[in-house]
Amino acid sequence: MNNEKNSMEKVNEFREARDWRQFHNEKDLAISISLEASELLELFQWKSAEEVKETNLERIKEELADVLIYSYMLADNLNLDIDSIIEEKLQKNDEKYPVSKSKGKSNKYTDLE
Image 1 (cartoon, rainbow, N blue to C red):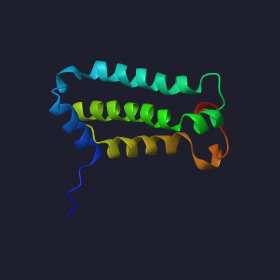
Image 2: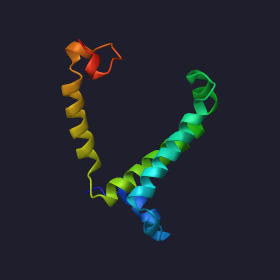
Image 3: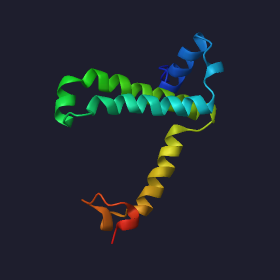
Image 4: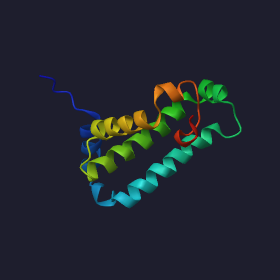
């Protein structure tokens, strides 16, 4: 049996040790996801994607981790299984973006022909 903790368990252990769950209501977690996503986006402002990847990969990792950590906490607060909600969304996207109509295209599903 694998005794290694998964990411959700590690995030919860971290915040429980600091008694931070009291601050992690759904509204504030959603705000935090947006703020951290903005920090990730800011790394790319006025630069090419290649430049940022070459010079700021560590910062990309940190900001992306922040987005994911807050997302995990929000999912946990709402008793949502991350794998399940991703699978459900992929199924919906598969219906909206069938390969036959969307392969190689960046059109929104409402603009596919």
